[in-house]
Image (cartoon, rainbow, N blue to C red; front, side, top):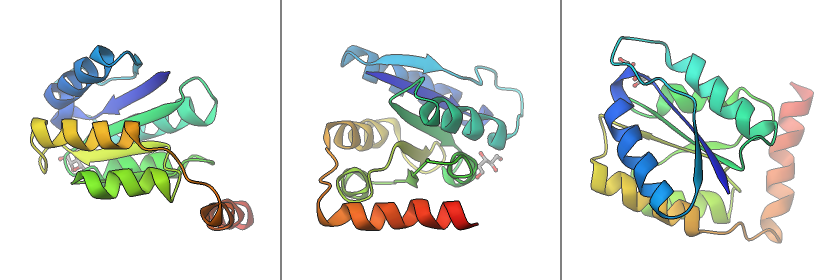
Length: 147
Ligand code: RB5
């Protein structure tokens, strides 16, 4: 399974920690940058992650900025993306099981590396339940289509 990862300058160190963590678990990572500490713009990297997932180049995405908010907003502008900012594992797990999230976002200034690993692990291990949730996920796509 391929995971697209993108981040801004605030999150290079955490991205590398999470990248190594998921690679150890057997996932292939497509690193979309940035890999520089120089100030950059989170929308660029959020869109890259969103496009990689929406196009099928990657199965899932992980997006990290200072808070996780900006980069998730950018990823969510790409049609078909359901990016969720998660600061703890419970929300991450439920975002996959109920909302079929396909991009996980978190903040390098919000969570430490061990919490980020737990969030990532719960999210990757969770499976979308479908069933009663599918109608609501379909409604999200309908909103996207009429706006
Ligand atoms: C960069 O200073 C910061 O604004 C960015 O990483 C992110 O937190 C935005 O949502």
